[in-house]
Amino acid sequence: MSRIGFIVLFFLSLSADFLPCFSAAKQQPPPKKKSAPPNRIGTSAIFPVQGNVYPLGYYSVSLKIGNPPKVFELDIDSGSDLTWVQCDAPCTGCTKPRDSLYKPKNNVLHCLDPLCSAIHSPGNGPCNSPTDQCDYEIAYADHGSSLGVLVLDSFPLQFANGSTLGLRLAFGCGYDQHYSGQGTPPPTAGVLGLGNGKAGILSQLTQLGLTRNVVGHCFSGRGGGFLFFGDDFVPSSGITWIPISATSSEKHYLSGPAELYFGGKPAGIKGLDVIFDSGSSYTYFNSQAYEAVVNLVKKGFNGKPLKEATDDRSLPICWKGNKAFKSVQDAKSFFSPLALSFTNAKNVQLQLPPEAYLIVSKYGNACLGILNGSEVGLGKFNIIGDISLQDKMVIYDNEKQQIGWGPVNCDRPPKS
Image (cartoon, rainbow, N blue to C red; front, top):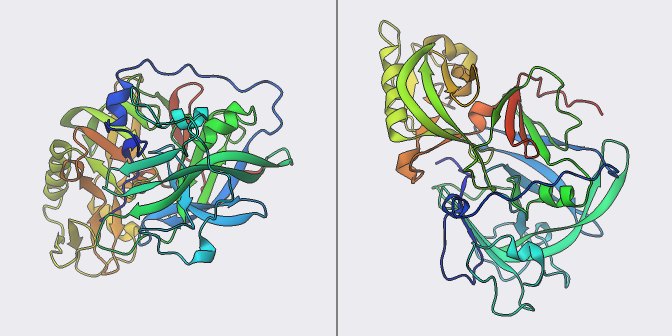
């Protein structure tokens, strides 16, 4: 089963009522965005990315935390805002060796800290006393979760202008992790949350006046890529933009409505709410859109030497050819392109060629990297995951409330 980063619950462990983020967002006006002060110390920061969609199933970045600094590999997740690492404490679900865990040193955040209030559901008191430690609990759409405490520690970051700062930022120290699926837990030490909640690393950097509230990533289909904070690496042209939905929770990036196209023609599916989620390995459509895609793909096989590979469990649906495929490039000629046409932006389509929705399994079969979101509890929401975000720069501009993408060589990080 693939990983899904899209967060469905985010609450303090001491809260009595657990409200979905997107429900809570509808009950209150969106927060006013603050621009970074003009005299910024830093400009932008860029980081190399590791990982791939298949067979690893995630992209990650290594960040230094603490003094002396220690390196932690973190799962890149635009579907949630809280960054957390596995905690060196009495721990459930922590499989890494002790020397790979984060050890707090009298740096736990208390409930009186504003960042503690930022992570609990509206209307629920965060703690019994202002001097209590600030606990958190976060649950993801794939039923994985993390429970822990907020801490404050140094993040040594090098900025594009050459400056290096040891910034004290808040993040989670997770001591009770649960993972979904049948396999072993991911080898990463935690999650880098890139959603636009106030407790996010990006929001904290913006509040400090160090970067614009912009984050982007470029995941290579060959593995690796780069991630950046700030707007210095955003191309001046060639980027397609769509607005972030006004009803979106501040913790994830929702846009829409969108209409589904297959082979350049309307597929009869409209009004799709779409979340851009780098924490999801694959793309998820609601049951209606998913079934439409599967049927259209199968109809396109007429006269082609493809049949279903029922013995391949790499993904729910795989197909085999006359001989094993060596790569997606070998298989793509049998499949038609998809597209999402966004009706809230003029003539804007997110193109999904076959390489943006297929993998080739270790058995040499072509497998559909679009899954049924209704089966995992996503309801009406549709997730654009890593498989469809590869080989393009994807930008989340929280200042202008827009999401952008464009063709970029993700194998070569831009120079400052």
